[in-house]
Length: 307
Image (tube, rainbow, N blue to C red):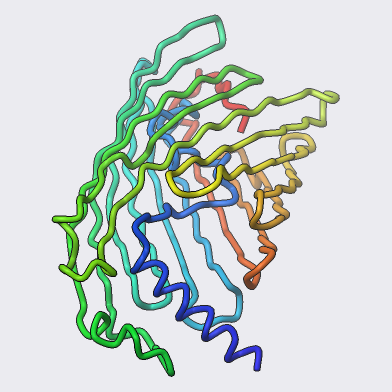
């Protein structure tokens, strides 16, 4: 019975994704460790070349459940006045929607105090949007048969912008990572059920690092996501770091889930993290995070990034 219920959930999820007028961006629980995903101004912020990999598998145990992956390379210029980045990403939704694309990042970094830096960033890219509608198993649902008798493939441009400030204890950022939208005349088909308009998502992030002691740091943070037609979503996060080596954290995403996370700074260059989401209405979700930094290329660097 549970298996059939999950199958129905998947079908409903696909129908809503294809029929709805808004598109939701992939969301990572460990966003605070690679904010390039939501803010172009973050690229190069760690002041050293960095490669970050994130892999999120939703709905544990359900075949064909949503999956998203990204790998990001970002670095500062040698004079630390600019930041650059490139990202490859792959998103799959229930073996029906498949998006593979690339983003390029550029930002200007402006010192505003002895330790504070303000970054102004831009993003440009595209993705290949595939709608494999013939893969939808509608079962007893017949109302959408005609609409889901064909597949679609389209190249979608991406553009975004953001602003980000950080010093050795505080950070704050505001961004609209995808501001390019479709109009209805650019839809896949004249059937209004297949219109797709990418609603602009706005993100505001902020956080602070408290030095409880020489070996203990407390790092609360907030994320607000605003998109037209949906309630404001808030992530409330708290991370405890021990000797800058082991991080333990918990988050609450309003109206959606609670989660736990753990990070280990294996070496000065390598960090691994894991998050486990426990949604209120769907099966659990797992997320893996890896980061490799090349600080030895900047031996005199002093990094003020608190995450």
